[in-house]
Length: 75
Image (cartoon, rainbow, N blue to C red; front, side):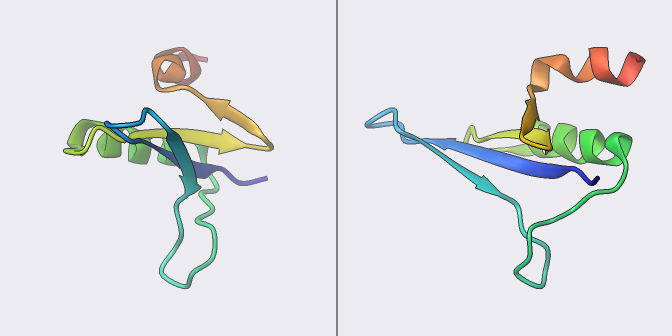
């Protein structure tokens, strides 16, 4: 099973959250085969966001929070 990247956007005026899955260049949901690769991508996205959006890894309906990445990578 592959991993997906979930982007959470929060409206600064209303506080409403909107979540979307990142797409590949062909309008399909991006699928990353390796956890390390997905974690590295999400780390880069979170470090470079200028809008304050949050990126997380998802697999099989389970979302791995950004704070959990060090724990996941060390296991």
